[in-house]
Amino acid sequence: MESIVLFSVIIFVASLLQTSTGFGFSIMATPFLLLLFEPREAIQINLILSLVISTALIMKIKQDIGMGTLKRLVAGSLVGLPLGMVLFLMLDMTWLKIGVSVLILILTVLLVLNFRIRGSQKRDLVAGGFSGAFTTSIGMPGPPLLLYFSGTDTAKEKLRGTTLAFYLWIYAVSLISQVVFAGTSAAIWTSSAAGLPIVVVGLVMGQILFRWINQALFRKLTYVLLFFTGVYLFWQQI
Image (tube, rainbow, N blue to C red):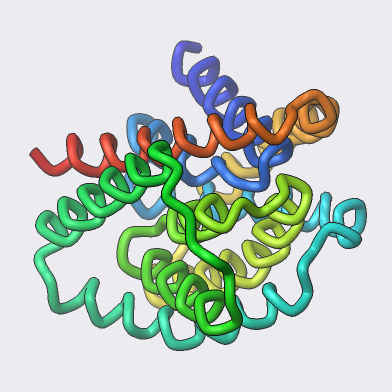
């Protein structure tokens, strides 16, 4: 019973964040799902439910998608995805995650101190590349996009729309890769199906919450999630 309650809370909070901000599911769900499932199971449940959320919202938020930015993010990820797999296979994951966590924390502090960059087509490609590499190496595509969009002061509507559309691509590729190379199980799909009603509730409430969040609060939520990600990755390795 305790496991069922914990699973429900994890999926609800992660769905609420993903729907209201465009990010947060993998950042919030993966660390806690690892308390209940084996790594392969936790990762695939995360991918399946994230895909459900993005698919459910894509038509509603399509007017907020920056199509030019999205295309460049996808193009950049085509380079980043295999690069991340190479890093995963060649590098010590402990040191890789420590390095990533320190980088995230440093850049988050710079953002809090009002460090800003100007968006460009080349930087869109670079952000997509890093996101792809993060996906296949540590399973978290979100941090590079959050850092980039926050640094360019992207409006919350465009951030949510563009990242959710990008996740459709990156999570679909990741899930297919997981199933092909790591295999899957009936338990993974059964658990994902059990989480679907909770995701629906999170979708509805997240849409309501999105209308209440102003740009300043949205930015603060971004910083909190980035800080949590950096601290979690660092703590996980020590």
